Image (cartoon, rainbow, N blue to C red; front, side, top):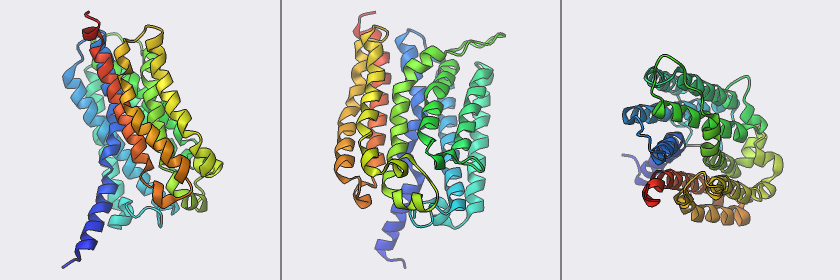
Length: 313
């Protein structure tokens, strides 16, 4: 019989491999679109919302599984990531198969969503998937060149938010609806910056492994000290992009509810500011970033939805 410590350790590794808290980044564009539409007096298509959320989770699962497969090919996860599914199972082929099934399932559901709204929904999601492959897949592997964060912002910001707005608010019909780029940029820019912060913080505890395997993340290029100094700018930029529409009257004051994520953001700033050079102390920093991202985005979505009620409209 296995030792209790071994069982607990393996359970912890599988829990880390599944990364269930990370899926808040997948569902956030749809939740934000829902809050914005409700705040405008538009009743979202709730059935579409359920399909969109499930598809988004499957597509992020593809991204995570494929990332483990591609990183196994380069050796970057060999020593620094025991919770990689390839390392846990020893079966790269099965992890790759699971990734491809998630991709097919997610795109199939998005095709169904698009058939009930606008074909542009599927095209926008395909663009997000293409960005995901450019980030991690051969021969591109742009994440190894320090471009992961801007690609992340683009995919989870204007592209995914525009897709969600069309899917949940479009009435369908014979003619194509215009892609709401302006609204998608206004609504998605701040939360997507918080999502990019999650990716940025995932590099701090593995600087040496990344550098040794040719993965030139921003933290590798800048050094952990200078990279940690950027974290307050991520947090401030996210909030500024969300507060600006409130100040100019485009959003109701209740949209400031996104500030509920600030305590997690401040805790992250303090942690990396003092411990950035100690990988064993900051291995959980991405989860603090994730808490900031999730609470900030949920607060904004709820605040937008409550705006008319609080203003007596």
